[in-house]
Image (cartoon, rainbow, N blue to C red; front, side, top):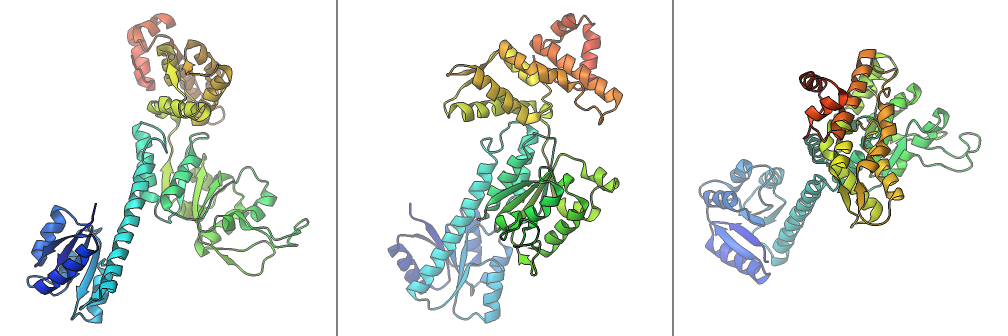
Length: 449
């Protein structure tokens, strides 16, 4: 379908000449002789692009440009015969993509128009990718919590700001980091380094690189992870485990945007988007003097918290279906009995999304080809983790909190076996139904009949 171009000029000869040229090139044209007519057309149904004269009878083209909404509803090419260099610069500052002097040559005007359309196509594609990232197929989940995470990714992705992703182990922090990289549009690689998995004495060269002879065994130049991620994104996973001496060097890299290899004599400029992730409470680490306060505030420019799976039970089934398709192919089907679904929703998932994937993979290996069925027998595979979860927070939670977590596990299990029926769960636990209901409410245990 041909694209519609709005021509805004009070000179009939220009409208005829430029309009004829555009129609010969396959465009459809619409005309406006005043700024008021142009504003109405742009508000009613924005065209693919606008060719705008600055000398209009009721209001100047510059004034019209200045009062249009941001971002501009359509790309605008300014066309004028008597504009000063200052007016031309002002038009570009207000968002015009190009400035063409009258009388324009056909080649000059068409090139300016094609460039404006190509730029808008690029912006539209970027927006499409941002919207696509917000779909469950990328960051999977139907809960309000995951919808908020997708919203934050779409908002922060296209910027170069440092993002700090926080959440328990296994919640999917690296997946969020990859989504941020995709949303950024950066052409370089996504590079991840786990700061807790590399010995402290090797971590510096791993991050920043090393020159030949910098240390025993350095027989050649080593390019660090920052340089590997040039024009891309670097994920510093488990940033809370970074030794204090390296925290100071990392802060300098973030401030100066350059790294210095071990044994090197000159800094190397970098263009890298940094994303950090941690399961630790960095504020507490700062208070305990285990993490630099200045580095914390430099990293926490845009914090994103990934909630634990137990706080977003609506995501359990969609995630399980996605893991099934991943393991058994696109046509892999997940079937759930009522007992199986209740068991999945009632399980506390101390290992979060990683534990759920391990459960689906274990079931995949145990079951024959065909639909993957989660029934009462399959749910028994969750029992060891459920028993462990009662003391999962030992050393981190108080005695009362540990007891409450254990009680939640018991209540969830009773509700799962009772199909979510509180009365049946009360009979199973041999307690008064009213007391049980009050306890369920007090502990915030979810009940779904």
